[in-house]
Image (cartoon, one colour):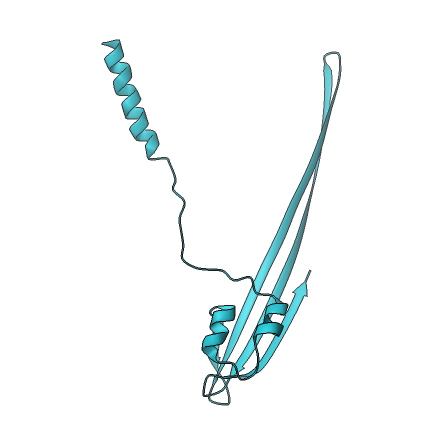
Length: 133
């Protein structure tokens, strides 16, 4: 009877705990690493809008402009955070001391790209701005 109860308890526990397992989520989106060098090297005046999408991906903002075309804006922000800590411990017989310290550093980078397209969906102008702080 005890063996049956333990077996039942183990089975119920296994079923209950299997609901807690998380599966990784796969996405099909590709986040491109856009840099100033990519823009300077790959994006040229006269390039088609379709080719721009292949290089940079979809823009964040699309608006109409004065020349019956569109203006595409790519606005990318990245933040780097680093942590460091140290601790020390000393003891003398039964009396101990402990000391902990930590540091953190945060830096942020932005890249804004503005691409102007004419009515034939060809690039007429490329501007960009990057900053780091």
